[in-house]
Amino acid sequence: MTLLGSGIFKGMAVTFRNFVGSYFHRERLPTNDYSWRTEGSLPQHAGDYPKEEGEQLRDTTTVTNYSRNFPMLLHDGSEPMDTIRCVACQICERSCPPQCIYIEKSTEKKEDSSGKMQFYPATFDIDVSVCMSCQICVEVCPFDAIVMNSQFELSTPNRFGGLLLHQGDLLKSNDYYHKIHPEEAAARDKRIADEKTAKEAKKKAAAEAAKKKAEAKAGAETEAGDEKKEVAE
Amino acid sequence: MSLEPLTLTDILIATVPLMLIFATLFAFTTWLERKALARIQNRIGPNKVGIPCTRIGLFGLGQPAADGIKMIFKEDIVPRGADRLFHLLAPILALIPAMLVLCFLPLNFPWIKNIQGLVKPFMLDGAVIFFFAITGLNTLAVFMAGWASRNKYSLLGGIRAVAQMVSYEIPLVLSAVIVVMMVGSLNAAEIVKEQADEYWFILSPWGFTAFVIFFIAALAETNRSPFDLPEAESEIIAGYFTEYSGFKFALFFLGEYIAMFAISGLAVTLFLGGGDGPGVTMNPEDQGLATEAFPGLSAVWFLAKIFALIAVMIWLRGTLPRLRVDQLMGFAWKFMLPLSILNILVAGFAWHAEQLDNTIITVITWVISFAVLYGAASGLNQLNRGKVRPREYKYAE
Ligand code: SF4
Ligand code: SF4
Image 1 (cartoon, rainbow over the protein chains, first blue to last red):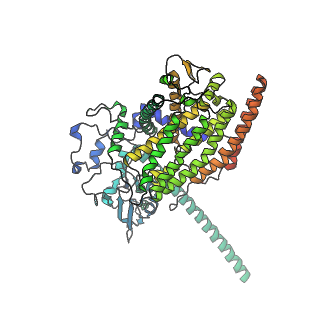
Image 2 (image 1 turned 120 degrees about the vertical axis):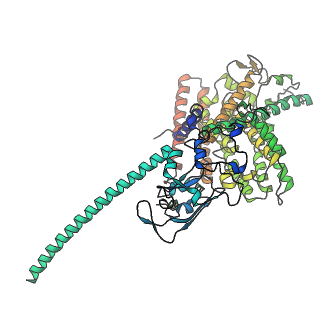
Image 3 (image 1 turned 30 degrees about the vertical axis):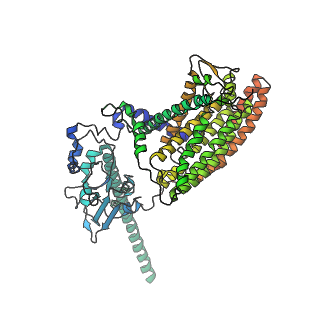
């Protein structure tokens, strides 16, 4: 039997570690001090906000490896639409609490990066004015196709269309993912690779078992055939 | 002791400093809370507002002032269908009882000595009862706010608040009963004196149990997390606060924090020895006033203890998720209520054992009562344990 209330104390120990740790380890903080950058490096007008992902990445003073903002879609190769991981299964669309994802499934299949025929999203929109950055879409996606981006300077002078991110805005390469969240991306890649090898091993085993079974069956059939012949004689 | 009416100066001496001190402490506490919660979540917290027109941040200590200015200048919006009068009265009614009970905390401020009347404010016989009677009004204010706003979320918040506050008031009062039994008086100053003479009640098994029950119920009474269902932002927007803005909202906020101070103050009085501490001797002849190493030391001890309790409240808020309504009610009626009733019985036996004045018997009583209370608590915990299911994803896999 555990001590009464030990769960609460364990939780309090965790928060206490965070409380003290945040004073001593800067890398714990998900965001760094941003607003007191020198006057010259601040964007002056809404349109000036750096739209390019590279520009924000170079500015390591503002974003750390643990910050997250809105989701992005991953692709594996150089041609985003040919190697998109998303198969338009729409699980994320249905799981999203504020319903800010809109997906239209393609009508015909297309080869994905591994050469398998798959559906792909004809439309994939996320309304970032509604998204609450909960990461549930990331958790439920069975294809590791959607992960969190840390790009945050999304201000736009157009308040209606400008905050609706389309497929083109959302698609980011796996390399980019490795750059912004190195640990998380490495862990994810490792898991995918492990799953793949496990699957292949299982497939191999299954194929072998099927082969054996087939052989056994064939053997049994020939025997049975022999018996029948005997009976017929 | 003949009752002499307090003069107007006496009343001003007793109340005005209290209001100023606690309003300042309120501002400081909001800053402290935001800072601590931020650090718990690995954020920095307010650190910009310091001295105006400069970049001197002072760790964001100017934040409460900035918040106050913002609140005062914000537009005060009253919904069209709302009952204007009660919409206005609710925040005031939330603040008044909280402010009122502060007078009955045995805080030995040096200027209390200047009061001419024979009776010092906190020497009221029955201060504990008065305290509970007045804080009970808070429920009314919350429901008034919920009802007068004419908003579904507000009404839901108000209903939740009434259910919660009424349920938790029972264990709250029952755990205070232990102390009253032990001391044989409802007078706050005498309770403190008794603890200074013998031991702080939190150090005995029944006192500790009562303190834990009292503290949990106090969290629920003041709508603090994890019992903040009446104002759950993610479920019912902000409950009864939904339709409040500007200064009325600030009043509610102030009332809530003052209520936190008041109830922590009562906990300190009942269980943590009040203003007792190193350098303070409680003087039985002097109407509960203390002899101190330097004037105000006992008040400093008292406030330090209050802040220790508030710090734990903030820490808990950063740690625990909000309860569900059924868990909340189940906890009050199926766990806290039986335990506090059992605790009263245990404390009764223990009191009689202590009257024998025999060290061995006292020690045995303490061990037995500790075992009984711990056994009862874990038994109740096992009985109430629900079945826990792993999280289910609705669409995936
Ligand atoms: S992102 Fe994942 S969950 Fe969402 S539609 Fe694509 S594959 Fe399905
Ligand atoms: S992060 Fe949450 S709110 Fe945003 S798209 Fe994903 S599921 Fe929806």
